[in-house]
Length: 430
Image 1 (cartoon, helix red, strand yellow):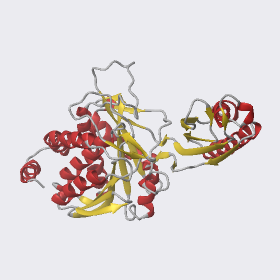
Image 2: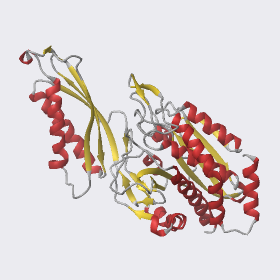
Image 3: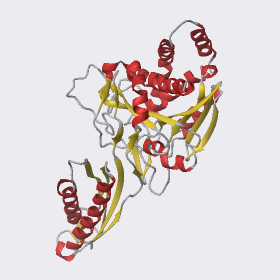
Image 4: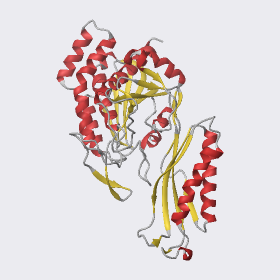
């Protein structure tokens, strides 16, 4: 740990301040460094399972704090173990590290100009979902907690996770692989948070039970018969077939599922086929995503999906191969109700009761769900929308215009610290 922060922490714990005041002052002191880390990661984003530079910076930082470090977990993941001076529970804190194949359009001094390979193509790379802020906040939390190790009742496990956006096709990765490799062994509880571009700075959002959807991605390969574009009757057109498949798939949600029970979404995100205006191609690929909240509806949707794709292709004289799931399949992100209720006072004390908002479930997905399936977990959204932006102005994640107000990260840092300290202290007094 840097000597200045060690002296600062010792001064705080020697002074007659409330624990909340100490956390607030530590967060104030660390905020410039957290912003600096975030800007560096934003300018140098890396795709899933390729987070080599990011992981190296994280590992070096944890080692500098005297934290036990394990690298190359699930390819590029980093695990840090901080043992407190007193016995107690093991609390895991998680941040995801990967970026997306998106070209940044926001004019920032630290704007990404990085390109990389994705599915065999050269693509721009951007932190279009805020994972850069997650890494920076958790690095700040590690520094703060390392300075408190003599007061900690338990152990903190810092999980810096690769490939939350899904590993490249043909590869394993993300939280699922980390769990398979034993990352959650010995952990009693896990906390995670996500910056939210549509939520104002200063707000925390939560929901007990199902907070985010299960996700299954898919690939459909439609095979027809190649022909000259001027004589379609000599071939079987996979493009026309694909258009019909896209339309027919939308009837699953609108006509086959009991939507008053739970929401569901089917989205085709990309179609690739053909090379010339006057050639009907032989083959076409479609990829997309399915979101569900109810296990029975998920199974029903999958069955209807396969039936519609196969029969629509057959009705056009084509064939279709369905790969579902294709490369990623996350369960529902589930917040343990007991843990959520237990930590609600912590959230309200940290952000102010008026700033802690109970929200409806959303159809976004998070592979934090794999961790929370192993032990009680609590996942939160922390506001990143500038207060100057009108309510009706929406900026979506995963887009070139994604933008967050960096001042929101301090609340995220304070939340991670208070959740950890309060949970440990509550466990030690039981």
